[in-house]
Length: 168
Image (cartoon, rainbow, N blue to C red; front, side, top):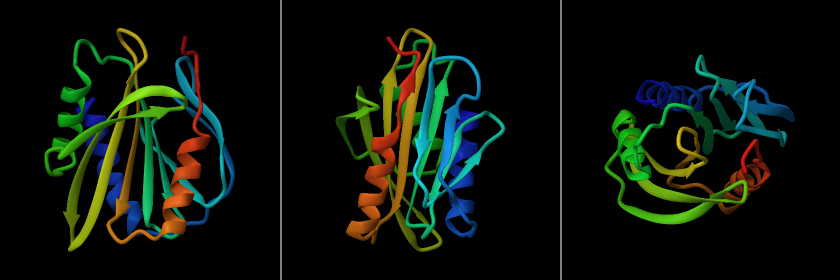
């Protein structure tokens, strides 16, 4: 799990500095099997899949990203332990606060942190929903600290479009 988290976070940093075009796209993470994220992503986002089948969404203006992953070998790790691993892999600050939220309508634990890269302050949030004894859905977001209200609205619309299949 830590290896895929490190890759996603490294990818986040690379794509925040790059530029590519984006289009509306049907997303499925993982590509096969269940549970899975499966939904039609709105346009305005560049979507990149890593070698683990996770998806990274980058706003066209590079103000924010969203990452989706389904962990299939979570074992007995608590959501707190997962969040600590996630932020450590990102070289981010330890989480500063917690809360509750939802991923596709399912209750999730939320952990907040921040990170500074090349004098750019980034806010990070990771939402973790334990689906069952071995599956975990993770939705994380990274935003620039000076994100504008319209950019926040676009990220909120993207996260609201996310759906999970194969969850009871």
